[in-house]
Image (cartoon, rainbow, N blue to C red; front, side, top):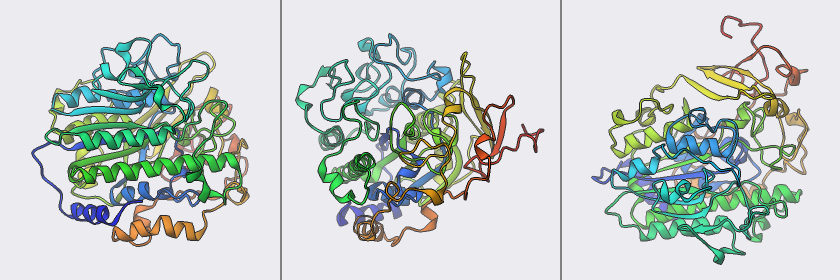
Length: 502
């Protein structure tokens, strides 16, 4: 929970944008497999996320923000400013024994920032290659790394499948972490790095959490009792454990923000929060119980639920904040955006970047320099899926995994069609009012906002799916067309009605 002293300071700096000769500190918090409906600033009423909500409400909620549908591609786009199809990551994730990684000729975000005097540190999940040491974080611009290299592992043993320990402190195996919860470990390391930082230099902290990705097969969902004890109203144990994992993630956001304040860095800091892709549903190989509802599909599909994710950016340096940004934005945009904020000459960036700077757009809630987003293009034998959004309109062809993940799924459901009225109360149980009041409302009230207002909470409500909607784009020989602004749930295929647009 955020403390009064922090909140008062936060409110002050929101009114008085700090000017500093030192470039802004940058803290990028990346969640893993967090679904659209798993944060309460999107209207979820099952798991309170008070610290995430507090920053989102006073920052800028990114409503039309897109990532890739899988872990490694999104992380590669973030680090390079390029689309995954430009760096060979569009087809899938980097596997543990795969003899490759993010290309060594690519210049990464921390390497750019280091030229401006930044001290760059990474905490958490890398997943961009480990077949040779030159692919790992400390050879890609980070002066320290505490975390793991591969895609997933146990939250307490830190073993990745049958491949052994995957937990590192500055390139050395860390056996001391055994039995300790990874979210807590990553939070403590982030707090330590902030406390020890020499504020004469700006800091880039990349905090890539394991949460809320599933763990190993023997421990898919796990959170310590202190996070799950208040969630007894969720009857399904797996969903309750996942909610505890999310509660720990939210606590981490609050602790890191307080650590910034304690160090006197908060007034000159940009905090970005994003998921790397949408939540996979229970029928997916990742076995999650997250929720993208009512968006269609999930990880690893090209439907909205696969790549339109919860995200916000917060900073006292913005001229305008406390609003919902409707502008198109892609995860690759962060590299030029953050570099411009740091004072880098963006005209010197490679001309083939897919990302565009959104710094001026975010400053004033102005028009986006981006009018289109390419979701993905796969040209495989069994999967030739692709999707492109231009303005309001989205054209796609769903095959392979996108065909298998084409429904509207409630949490912990493999049903391809889940209507809001049929939600199982045992699974979609709403947080009790007293818990909501004790955890969420006081923080927002201390920020001077009282109850959450409609201007800083975005809930998508498309109504009940029309009859036969599940077949509106499956097994068709021609692409489908949707107006994502009017129809974010992708109910109405307009390809026959608007052939000229298609």
